[in-house]
Image (cartoon, rainbow, N blue to C red; front, side, top):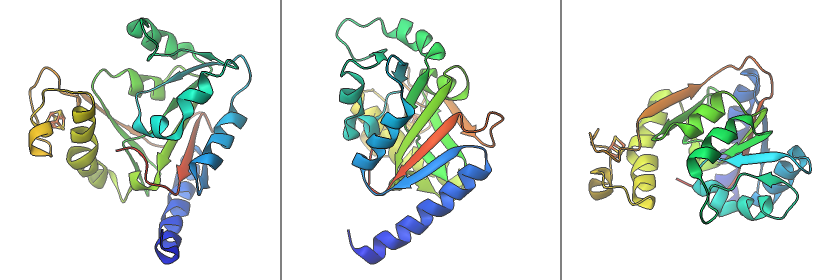
Length: 210
Ligand code: SF4
């Protein structure tokens, strides 16, 4: 990437990180997914029970492979024959929960929209520690911009990825559908936290996920 462009992106990342810290979330900015993986590893202890929310970012980064290397008790929702509903419930007592965020505002808020609700539920309560990993492309100015991001990019792209029969997969933007496969059932804004640093955000200077 052009250095001047990246300098501006990096300033935006640092500004957002400061706002997240003000909201009692831990935050680090890194240039690459490799650096992010090292930080994630440093947050995990051998034997930890770890669960993940559905995320293209985690797929892109190779986090799942790392969790499957035998050091952790990984509640692997993608394993063939996995009892996914049980894993969703067991995730609430995990030591660590890994996820991305649909958007992160420059005011230090996470904005997430979920179909099943398992991902946003675990983000809010349950796992002792939550690690949120996101590319710079997830940063938006405020909650209004976060809603637009989800309606115009994240939700239609995720609905397409998951093969949902929703109108956005045909039009490319939200039609506020009443489809049985609607993936926008619940929206959650994560603002200032009571438990300091339970949520740890790693902002990466790469475009990742939707
Ligand atoms: S509400 Fe429906 S149409 Fe809109 S983004 Fe969500 S799934 Fe797509």
